[in-house]
Image (cartoon, rainbow, N blue to C red; front, side):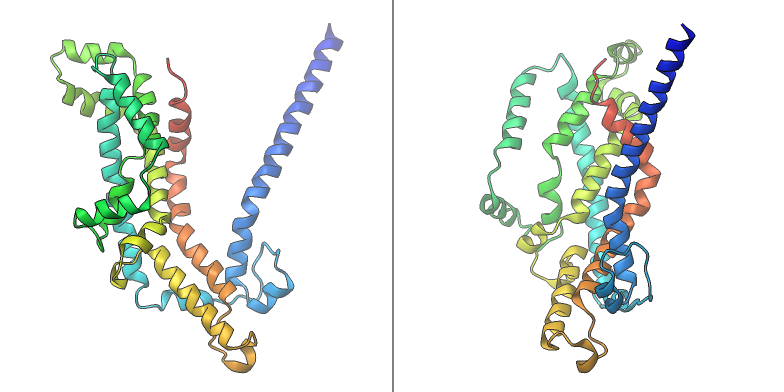
Length: 298
């Protein structure tokens, strides 16, 4: 009996060790590209050519970051991106939760028909040209709202919130109704406070969607003063690439102020991802809980 227990204990320990080894390997594989990008952005270009796979910066060179942040448009573009991300995320959460709550109630008439419609819209999209015509027809062309409206309610987020709301016990809603609460009060005072984890999850998804969007800005924005951060960084990289090409690839002999486009590219990457990395640790616990809790219906 004791021998069998020791054998099982050894098997459990070996299994735990194997799990930790696999998790460490996966974490290293996922973390390496980020460390490599940061190291390249902070290192001199000559050192990068010798050690392209580095994970620690050497021979610190901040010229690429200086090029990015000395651009006159950079803070305006940061402000545009922050406006789109914050206002768009807030509106998206409001509309998604407001739509998902009635869809989660069993007494809603034609519930199946509404969900079928939303799924069809998610699978079959109209395309770029109809979207452009709608945005232009609404008078939002060359406006920051053109970057917000198309992403206000992704159907996947709607389904996630609907599934989470369905996991809320009916007894809590019935108790609120017995106390005389109407549907709007239940939605604001009962449902939303219980949904912080799910809201944080879709809020992070939505914020990343707005923050990283590039294609919509190319289509709908004409004035440079309204460019988001992604579009401006592309312009900076293209400018550095053109200067590098004009130098024939020999930066030292032509102009010391010309910066290799590869350094500018990685510096731009760090500038883009740094705000998301700074925000994520504060909502990580809600994010993980929100993703998991909506997957199981009680």
